[in-house]
Length: 249
Image (cartoon, rainbow, N blue to C red; front, side):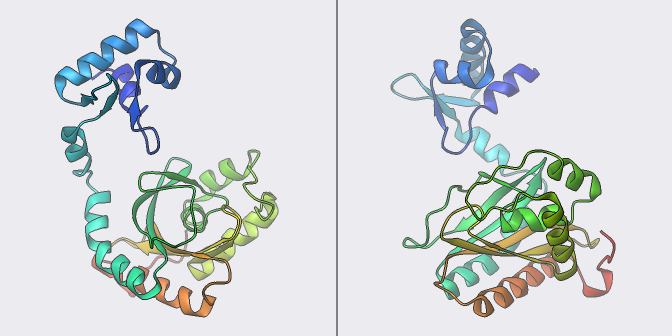
């Protein structure tokens, strides 16, 4: 499959799951004739479906293919009972995220109907510098990515967003030491997030687990220990044991 065909497929994302030819042109920057030809080829191959009004969506065949991703699906499956337990106990947002490039991608979430509103959903991306899962993942990603992220102009999503590189470096050092991150209103006003790391069998941090609550609705001491315990349990399901934990990140 050519890279331009992939560009058409990757134009679809959460919140943009049904696209017209004009939408695809805007997302890919390709000429109308090229976009139309590629979209029709993908539909003929079964990678895209067409709606009654002629727009395009990702097909069920492609969705099934995505579930075969070698890491995220086993991780979701192993983590789901612990995510369900956290959700049942706290009745808040509980989410699991992994690092992809310079963003955190949510691969699972349980949400209570009356929980605080969030800007993202499953499959959505979160910035590394101001989300709790992002800070956990960035803090353990190594100096090259940290330097790249902190070396750019960082967006302030709210008045509470920390954008000063020196403050963030100090905070990331604390994250590496404690294994946890707490974000108070930095990404979404009125929302606090508590996150912890998840290890694989080799002791590398491969994911982050968090609970997002409405500010002031839950005591921190009632949330963070439960999140950490769930993260350790998921890590053990992935083969991690305390003696195998790496101390240098």
